Image: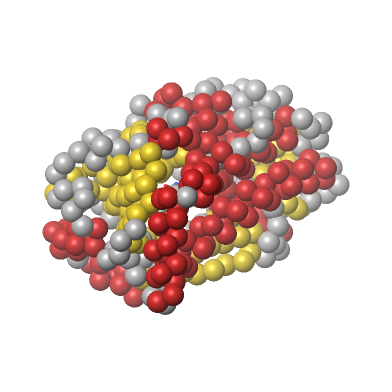
Length: 394
Ligand SMILES: Cc1cc2nc3c(=O)[nH]c(=O)nc-3n(C[C@H](O)[C@H](O)[C@H](O)COP(=O)(O)OP(=O)(O)OC[C@H]3O[C@@H](n4cnc5c(N)ncnc54)[C@H](O)[C@@H]3O)c2cc1C
């Protein structure tokens, strides 16, 4: 009873998406998640995540997008600019022939839809709360010790999927190194109510200290993601709501009218963490366990979902999901997309958080070129939509 084909370690958004992606698979799957299920209720200022068009398609293929769409705000256009300088880059869904470039969706809603689907799956066993503590890799399978409520349970699986986040326990247990780049910045995330409708436009504004982004939420509200240097985060978090709103408004400007109400604030330290390898014997890394990125380009989960889609395609065509050939094919599929998106995101952070004068000129002309040069526009748009990284079968 404790022998599985696939053990997914970590039931965050990426691990849960993989369990759903394997719904039609004959493989026996176990998902091990350390945290108890969250008990959050709908509220106006809850956290959102921006999904791009590729993610919409992937979730559509798994039959779960319809339910998520009900709690999503379409992003019909984006507007990128730099504070204090001319030059903007703008993109509209219409130029890509789409209803939306992406959707800003409540995290709670995505989690709830994935959980409801997982509860219907006869090939899935869910162990939650339960924490992986030991791995022993053999020729044909991996033995795992999982601790739940003070009891240790042993399992085995032909493939272990590490979806256990940026501080991956699987990576540590296997002694795989990770490359970490600390950006010395925090993102402060909150919601704001606006004095006038956002009309589906997402704004990203670069400032010398870091970007400030406003992404449409359902109703007349927006997700506010404000990146600040580490040394400023404590003081910003300590401001009362009125003072914080006033500073955010001053930094962002008046394009969206007045910020009239602030929701709860969360702060996140920002770093890029790249696993030294995407695979190990009978083990594969996906989502943040494989690569955790700065949120400036809203790509982290979108990239992780393409990991899911690619791995599901490889597993569907495999006799043995943990065979070396299956894992090598997965790594080859993901290499380019992962490298392109993580390098592009890193370049954006470093170029736009820099006060060096010649980089200021480069940024200005870069934005002008993206706005005016069709081939460059097309390339940036395709990257943003995520289409370049979709596996053929999704
Ligand atoms: C401020 C901010 C804004 C962002 N905005 C966007 C956006 O708009 N669009 C986008 O695409 N991305 C965005 N991202 C990135 C996105 O949030 C992440 O890429 C995504 O949530 C990663 O999901 P994950 O499931 O891989 O990892 P996690 O969410 O970290 O989940 C890992 C899970 O593994 C479990 N776990 C850990 N260790 C063990 C163990 N030993 N045993 C069992 N379980 C274990 C944990 O409990 C956790 O549930 C943003 C990130 C930040 C910080």
